[in-house]
Image 1 (tube, rainbow, N blue to C red):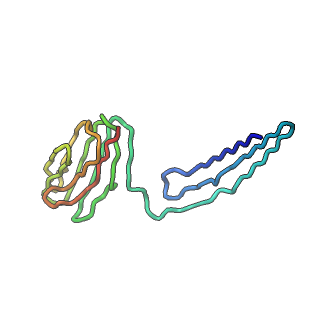
Image 2 (image 1 turned 30 degrees about the vertical axis):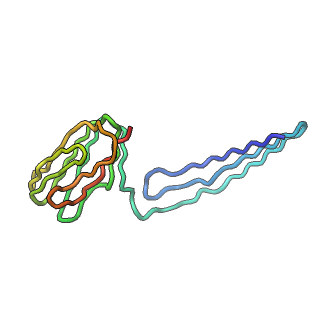
Image 3 (image 1 turned 180 degrees about the vertical axis):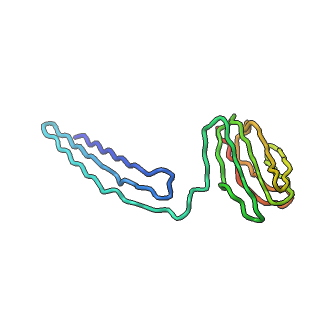
Length: 147
């Protein structure tokens, strides 16, 4: 006797409100002379997330990351993921004189109020790299470079 079970699960996208469809299971039992099929379907279940995603992932060959810093507040995601070999441009605007630093790549740019610091580079080193305001030791985000 052979037994085959197939389960399919569909999930919503990255929206803060998403719809999840529960599993659809089909079981087929085969005997030498008989066959039986049973199908069960569940109703969609609606879920809501109170916290929006804080990670951005892109496969684009060029990525532009824009960050705005006002005092201790940082506007932007906590983590950005890019593919190895991507061209990345980081633009950081702040309300104070500062320096933005991309660790691991050892790249720097000066920031002045009204004049953002801009760094453009080829993400050719895989890993996780902190991007921070250097003098304030304030983490802006993590850059993840994947292979």
